[in-house]
Every structure is written in C-alpha cells, then in structure tokens.
Image (cartoon, rainbow, N blue to C red):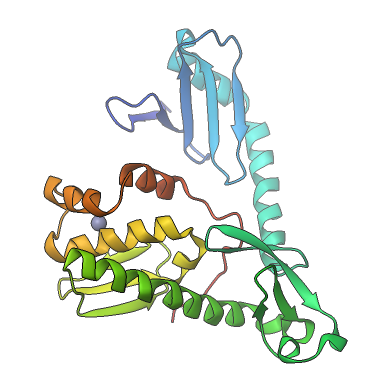
Length: 256
Ligand SMILES: [Zn+2]
C-alpha cells in the first residue's frame, strides 16, 4: 500500500508518515551534512526518523519498512514498560510535579507520627504519604492537587482580573486532561487541576489567556495583542506549553 503522506504545515520541515500497523512517524529530512539515518523511539512513544534530505522520502520510507519488525518489537516492549510504571505509580522517590519543579515521594516511618501519619503532606522538599494510605494515593493526590490549583489560581486570577478589567462570572477547577483552561460563552473560566504542575509564569500566561477570552471569544489579532499587553514573551510561553510533557504521574483519574 502506498504510504499516506501529509505535510503538517506547508512550511514545515517535518513530514508525518502513516504506515499500516505503525503509529505516526515523523520524518525529519536534514539539509545539512548528515550522512546517516537514525530511527528513534522517544520516551513519550513518538517515533522520528532523521535522514539526509537528498535520500528522498521514498528511500526513507523503504528504510522504515525494512525495520518494521524491529519497530514492532520495540513498541511492544515500550508499551509493557509504561504499563508496569502505571501499576506501580507511587513508588518511593517518585518525582511529583508541583509549580514547575519535581519533589520526591517518600513513605513516612510510623514513628514520625503527627499529621504526617494520617494524610498526604508536602513539606516544601518532599511529599510524604503514610504507607497504610498507599491504596488511596490517587484520591489523596487528586484532592491535594485540586486545593493546590485553587490556591495558586485564585490570587493569580484576582491580580490579572484587576489589571485587565476583565471579571469572570465564575471560576471552576476541572479535571480536563486535554486543555489547561477554557472560557465559556457565559464567562465562566475553567482551569484543570493539572495547572498546579506548571511554573508560576506559565500559569500567569494561561490565566491571562482565558481572561482575554472574556473580551475576545476567538484567537484574533486583537486577542493576542491583549495577551501581549500583560504577558511579555507570551509566544515563548505558549510554545513551551505546547511542548510540555509531564514526566511525573499521568494519573488515571476517574471522571469527577
Ligand atoms: Zn484560547
């Protein structure tokens, strides 16, 4: 079968290649002095192929075809590895994201006692979870993050709302996985609790972005001008966010 090729953008240097039985592969033709082909499966499961542009897409595709068996084997191993990680999500030392940094998870010793013996505690240096609560770690982290998100969002929204003269009707903390924030037609702003993973300057950008939607219900030039008035370098922050992959937990949170 002829591979389905599509250029992501007309100016893009990357080409998405879809071959039967394989996930999308990103072809990166190099116009430099590259002489070798490299096929790579990244930590996030994405596959890229870098190759000298003069080889052409046809030969790059042939190369991938000749490696299909190898790729399938690697992908299988990759998937079973990530499953193992998911089932043992809360191991000692696991990096837990909070406000742009990672803090290790620790199981407290029984003699530590006090509040740390009964609940999930963040000390400023680590997260402590009592061993007997391991079974409910997911729920404990979920409610911890919802409060953390609210604690960082409320002052941020208040601050920028006053500066921008933009007042939301309501603010909600959501469990959205696919977006950080949204603005409804009725001017309610929703923010995913996962926003607590991010650094403050990125949270500022997300908040200003949604507040600007109170005035501009689109991504017009006027909208971006408003964002730019309050967030310097918002383009860089937007790009950073698009490339962001949390290397910590991808908790399978139930809908709630
Ligand atoms: Zn938007």
